[in-house]
Image (tube, rainbow over all chains, first blue to last red; front, top):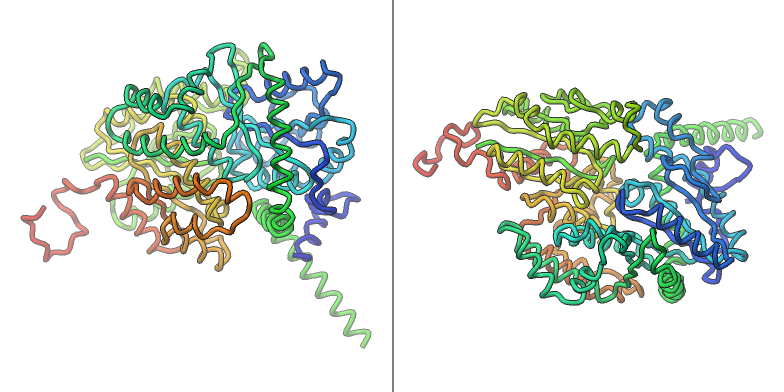
Length: 329
Length: 272
């Protein structure tokens, strides 16, 4: 483990002698301002939601700290991935398509994430919370090594909350709704962090239908029955029973990034989640932290095909040291 | 019977690699195979697609077009919508014989499956041409090294399965890149019942809090033979064969074939 920390410091070309988890070196602190990771499918209104929440906090004279991790979207924030990584340049330089470029940008940014954590922690006495906007394509964050590193690095430093933004207007079909909820559930299992769902765009469609489906299983079953034919209906029904269990422990907030509805409820939910973090995650993370993040960091380096190089360098170094030892003798 | 494998999964999960491995495998079996690249943002791949959607439209075309101002994601959605309206373009290039076997290498964005109706429409079109469609959901085995993560992977796969309404096989890719002990762990997890896995996790507060949910998920995964998860090691011929056999069974390949070159001679022909 010590070895991989050492090799990671080599590829970070800075005075910071650390891996991405340096910010957490003194362990998780449950009293710091929470970081809120905003996830959601492309087009669910993540960025508008972040902007509205920011404006809401500004109006209360408690401006938040905002971090943007989407290399393809420009808007004013405190820390912007685009200051570190030029998306267009990554595309041309590495000969990548739009997707590969987003992943690579995130990987590159990840190598500097220790700095971000440092900044966020430094700010945490003056801001109520840190909001983190993620790339438009959700799996660039949920199914990537860098997304895992960023999430775990944050969670092992201070309270971290995940918000899943769901587009109410698109969730009106039972199948889409179910698919969205299954995805939300998978995020819960992947991150194991305090988590709640925001039904955004309440100004377009009132998500009361969603709440009814979530509280009344039979009603959802009926809707499902009406909208689907035969084949996987059975599976869908069993899954809706599973989801029923998921809803029991799930907090949801109805809001609209357009009208600003529901923002106070979002803040209350974040506070509750912060408490959850203290009760459940501190014991868990204290233990998991060192082991897990190291593993993923190692994997990321392999992904970036830098692992071989650094280990070769290391082997050379070791060889050299040994040589000189021999000479001394 | 016309068969079609729809290859989906997150970016970097090994979709294109799977296609090229199967391309080689099919060639050595002398089985016909056509591959369709359906990802307008694809970069390079080491198989020869019979149909390359980028000849019709590519994300770069859209991004470079000054009349359409879109980010990369909007661009992709625009392309996919265009494709779903021009499916005949693909149909014309397929041999479309009775024994056609097609693999479709899809874009990774989950939004196309669970958020927008586009992929569903594309699948419906293929079905209307009498293709038996089987969805293959690729998951990088590196991301599922623990029971909880495996469940997360399964849920992600289910989320796409539910909206596509096809039969499905879930493939854990890159098994060859795992360290030996992790590989063993993953194989053990796949062999045991999900319920056992869930009961076996340690009693962290998080696990306790979600115990009921985990059990519910596990029981669905166990009870549904429709949900299959297979590990794939690209370097192991046997692993590839096993997977293909499972897909062929799911897709019902060759059930109506008159000459089946893989059946040994002693089998009674009347049974066919």
